[in-house]
Length: 357
Ligand SMILES: Nc1nc2c(c(=O)[nH]1)N[C@H]1C(S)=C(S)[C@@H](COP(=O)(O)O)O[C@H]1N2
Ligand SMILES: [Mo]
Image 1 (cartoon, rainbow, N blue to C red):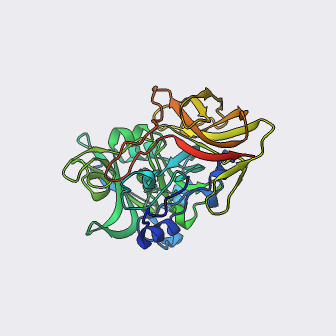
Image 2 (image 1 turned 90 degrees about the vertical axis):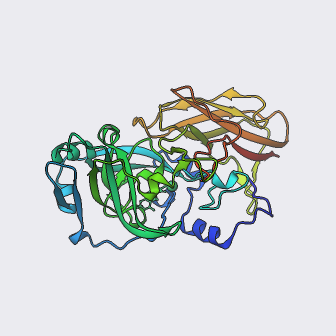
Image 3 (image 1 turned 30 degrees about the vertical axis):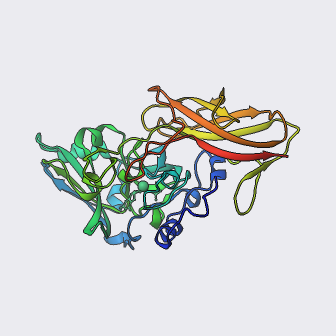
């Protein structure tokens, strides 16, 4: 996947890309992404949080407010769930023209085991008012976006916050959250694009009016022009990726594969809407497809599935490998992305140039 020389990546984009690293695609070989290989997206700065004085404040339109220390959260019944998380902007830099923001290619994804307190039980305990509409999750990080000074905040409709299996997580892969992944507490919303998984979570507020904060009303909306209201970005579209076969060229990262024997292609596929039912592979840039084998090796419904395909290249030479996932709703990855202003939800099939020696 080469970026053309005139793609004009600016220093600002390069700085964002260096701060917010992707998951190297060879990490698709691990069912659970080691924490240091999981992608990162941080809008502002990583806040320094003193765990001893940290509190989670739960309030708003509720019968009873709560203020919980980290020890009090850890003393509650907990759950652990494997969840695949993908940035809504994954694939943005492959759109033409390129929306200017964090310039992701295809690798803004990872899967972790998140342990913490089920959100539904905590919401029941505070007794949301009958008139409650949304639940707003506030992080400790602050910044300026489109000239609006703000803290990072995202909301969910109350029914979704109660029903979607959300977790207030304090552990990632059996260790305390790392600072960059939200220490000491983050929201995990299985199936939703990354932006709703609020890190450094310090407040949960039930509102009677629909929440109209920047990250919900302006950012993360699928729209083709500035004056369009658009629709909110919510659950992940189906997507599959391939672990890079063979060995890479250092600079282009194009792949070289030894010929003369079958090549086992493997990767992972996920969707935030329904489990993956099919992954197909093409070695002619999407002109023809053959079905791969699926392995649902993680049982959690919003963790990715593994896939593999035994590829027997007809002859040495260049190929463009592709993979395409279909989920249980029947939605499949498109060959071409749907352009939009924010560069969200680009789940077009991946193209992997390979030379068979
Ligand atoms: N408080 C806060 N939460 C946040 C963000 C942020 O900048 N601040 N970034 C969001 C976005 S856009 C994504 S994609 C995920 C990334 O989570 P990760 O860095 O743990 O992979 O966190 C989300 N939660
Ligand atoms: Mo994101």
